[in-house]
Image 1: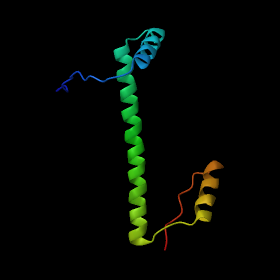
Image 2 (image 1 turned 180 degrees about the horizontal axis):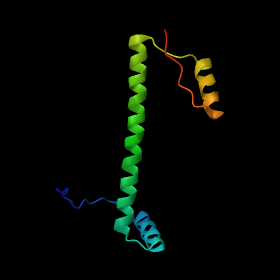
Image 3 (image 1 turned 135 degrees about the vertical axis):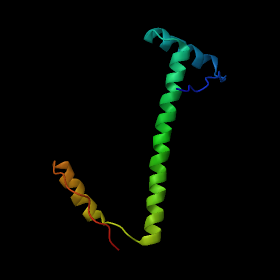
Image 4 (image 1 turned 90 degrees about the vertical axis):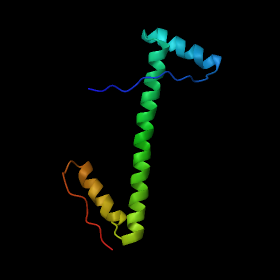
Length: 96
């Protein structure tokens, strides 16, 4: 099994943030290092998901532009209402 190289990275933060991180770390019985690593990991995961969602939207728009395939608002609303009511229904078919 290979392990990724872990290398230190320096970031510059203001004294106020440093103090806040220290207080949180003490309250959580963790080190400031652990807290900052956790914050960075959560941020990266969230932003990757956000970017994937954005790319899905761009791809959907491009597909619509290329094909004209779509569902109407009423079709989508009806489908979502059925899902909300607890019915396991397939999404409406796209059409021109």
